Amino acid sequence: MMDTTSLGIVGVGHYLPGAPVSNEAVAETASVDIEWIRERTGIESRHYAAPESLTSDLATQAATLALAGAPVGADLIVLGTSTPDKLAPSTACYVQKKLGLPGIPAFDVSAGCSGFLYALSVATAMTAAGLARHPLVVAADVLTRCVDPTDHRIAPLFGDGAGAVQLGPVPAGYGILALELWADGSLSEIATMPRHDGYFQMDGRGVKKVVMERGPKILEAALAKAGVRLDELNRVLIHQANPKLVRMLGDFVGIPPEVAPDYGRLTGNTAGASVPVAFSMAHAERPFRDGDLFALLAVGAGMTAGAAIVRWYDPDTAA
Image 1 (cartoon, rainbow, N blue to C red):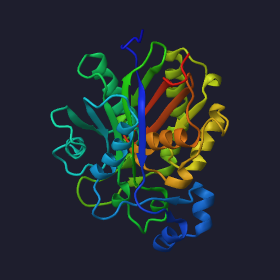
Image 2 (cartoon, helix red, strand yellow):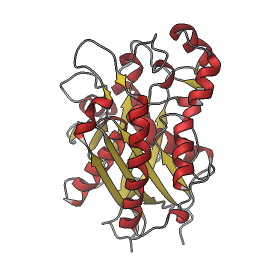
Image 3 (cartoon, rainbow, N blue to C red):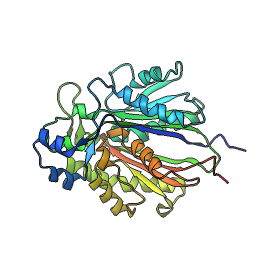
Image 4 (cartoon, one colour):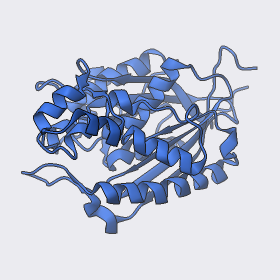
């Protein structure tokens, strides 16, 4: 008999708008050498949302795919974003409208590139409190609109996108085994965006330092909470800040490339959407098998960080 107190991922989807934007196109605008982009970041292409597209449009596309593959419907929407359609109402309310799901609670969470992990934690806690049974967790950002296209340090890094997971009941021992969150507001100026005029600003060295210091610690804490060893993980989906940083973190922690795949070379840094986009792309490329263990890990503006340990449930092949 299924223990409905366990909550797992039962549907997943992602959306990358438009055709890939090449390094050549970015290099021309930002007046930077193509080889510099490739060597310094490892990014080969990224996607830009059309001028008329909103964050809610991208989020709705990803959410529709997640819902289409799930055995349950959403009764809550939690959306992680740093680029809301408007300051009010929440972008999640627009997504609710576009999905045709009136009446269910919907709200946003802002935690930079850790936004998906924060949103996942909130949705999981609300389920445990009896406020939902099968939440839809989405992350979407169009951060390219907040970046100076002539800034050769930042412009080549970012792309737009959205990812979503539908949560639902799974048997005991499966699903979300542990969640861990962290923030330090004293580091807030490392990555910041002005409220009105101005572009996104980032201290790349400062970000790298926090990623390398905090990433391993929060992953270790989540693993300990779940009672899982690092070498038991089948895959680790790390925030795709850029392929060079992902590989550096993987090597430092001791995660081989085949366990920590790189999708940022094709997407760029999609901010809060990065983790669910990478998760969805990983599942599409090499579907998770019943019992697979995987970790989700992100460090973002705030500075913030989040990690989750999940055991995959496949009802078609489960023993």
